[in-house]
Length: 390
Figure 1 (cartoon, rainbow, N blue to C red):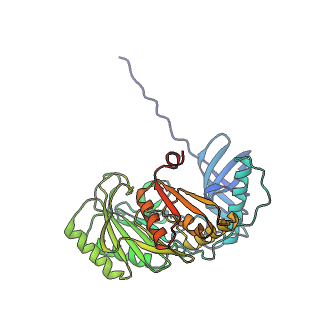
Figure 2: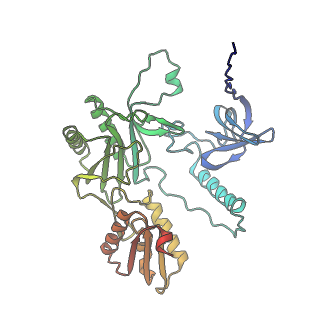
Figure 3: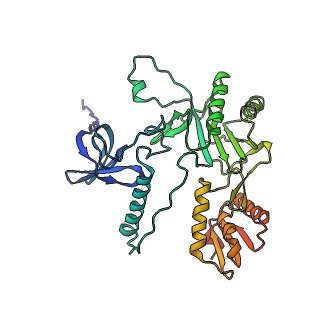
């Protein structure tokens, strides 16, 4: 009798490298070291650290690793202020002073332009940092999951661990696990009050959190927009309709966060989380929020794009306007214009504004924004830039 043997390739065990000197920064918030002629990209390290690192991926000329233990901390290393740092992917550089973050970002940008873009750069002006390094985002999205991410400390305990619900962010590179976020520093504290209040209510009432593998459960996402004007829009995404349960949930949300100016819900029965092809339903309020850049006001609908750091958008647009040096005779083409914010911001010095955006809802917002700001010399077109402009 002939025997059939199957060959099973054993997964190669990656080594632990000790006392590795970290020499610089790379893309995506990673540091780098050079070991035996190979470049190692390290998560969680700071240039100047000496650390033991665990290799997680190994190629011929490069590898990836995570920090297992800091043996000698870099003089630049600082204590992260968020208890979720290191697991949550929202902030990658909290262990680095903001001034150093800016330095490394500028160095990386210049190197990419030189090495990849083959650009012969003139003297580069210093990067303009944000005055606010916490509570600066105007949009956040949180995910409901019945698969809470367990930390190594939890796994190492003797207690029996059961599947638990979580409301927070996806863990980087682990698509079906969510870290339960109790305090997020990216947006005003209203995001914490809202998220934690919803978690408490939904768990107390045994509402089902979404299972991304099985496509079951009811609660999927919370999308929050909070403007400098004080307007607050919340969109709760559900897997299917349950009118009675939905009304109770939304009424509770309005009760715990009365500052909400627009509350919506979206039914998403699809396997993916995208809602661009779905219609949010207004439960309370006018269905949009208004944000301001300088003296200009902008209507933002639930699916429209707007720069997530309002104050830095103001700074960015002001620099672009200064560099443009408009005299009143120029046509400004605002391509991929979203809600028309850049073109309208430039409008005082332009002869005409032409904006193009593929998302039709955003173009409707752009037209409303132009009217809202008495910008009568602007035209906005819905469609792909390649089709509209050729």
